[in-house]
Image: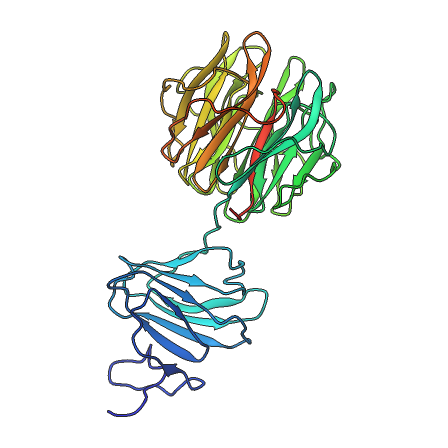
Amino acid sequence: MSGLVKDNIFGSSGVVLEAAGGLSWQPVVTASTVTVEAAKGYFINTTSNACTITLPSSAEAGDQVILIDYARTWGTNAITIDSNGLNFQGEPDTYTVDYDTAGQSLNLVYSGATVGWTPSSDIVNALEPVEPPTQRAIFAFGYTGSVTNISNLVNSSGGIGSDVTGVGTARQWTSGTNYGGDKAIFAFGTTGSRTNVSNLVNNSGVVATDTTGVGTNRSQPGSTKYGSTGQALFAFGSTGDYSVTNLSNKVSSSGVVASDTTGVGSARSNLGSAPYGGDKGIFAYGDTAGSGALSTSNLVSNTGVVSANVTGVGTARQLLAGAPYGTDKAIMAFGNISGTQNMKNLVSNTGVVSADATGVGTARDGMGAAGYGNDKAIFAYGGQTGSSLVNTINLVNNSGVVASDSTGTGTARTWTSAAAYSFSA
């Protein structure tokens, strides 16, 4: 047969279907990058290399692009879709979209600005768009001899900047976490009296003024992000000098704190918390106020549901901190039990807490911790036994190895908190 055969991607053997809108098939692509055009089909051959496919920078509803795994090698060398400023399945082009199953065929149709490009069919299966990793972090609030609201930004290499003039109510024993993908939120804490105010942090690291509090006033809670669309959760904490709770409060992808959710797990404060597994979270350790410290953990599902207690592993302690590392794992480190500690416990990508590992760095408690640089973590600040405040830093690599002390930057303080923010390095 001679001439151009159009839009026969899903036709039966020997049956040539009518051309759909004049779809034109292009020569086989073997390059590592290609910019495609609407109304065209492309055979993508990744036998020798992966391929990044850039979609048109402008499109109209109904525009169509078809991509086919020419050599059934996408399972070895995947394709990555760059939506070139337009949305892909409702997500901005900062999200990563990979197709990595051999034999896939994609029929992409532009539906309009809200959803953008969407597969009308993606034979075999498709991956959901993946949120880009956060790169930076922020430490804020704490106690320097009095409560403070200063903050310090962390760059994508783990370097801490000098003090930034404080915004919001000065307080200690807050908790901070990532939300909305590239932003952060600090909430709760005490000024001398427990509070439920929150402060949002934009993707440039600017802390906003107080947002009217929601939920039970408390201090020393934990917090973690969860899910795949930017939600977060605050849970546990102290509601009085000898009173702890297991209440939780969800945070929407726009940073709105919800009212209290009935608690699950042992009521406690001064615990560690972190995301793990890509879309889940964990709360671990802490102080029950009446019965001493725990090593118990509680997992958080990708819908924000807190599980019942998981039998504890490692030394029971309080005033520790937790952070993600390695893209899907977490680390709990430092704390206090009969004196300050520097031990660590790694958390697997299924939420399993490991036994104690030998500590590195200055033993202390009351520090903050956060992820940074895609797959690493940082612990900083805190107090040593004897009430000595420090601004010491310990970086954690993507294998969970804690580095020795780095010279601190910013005002030494304790009972601070930290959170990741920003997709930009």
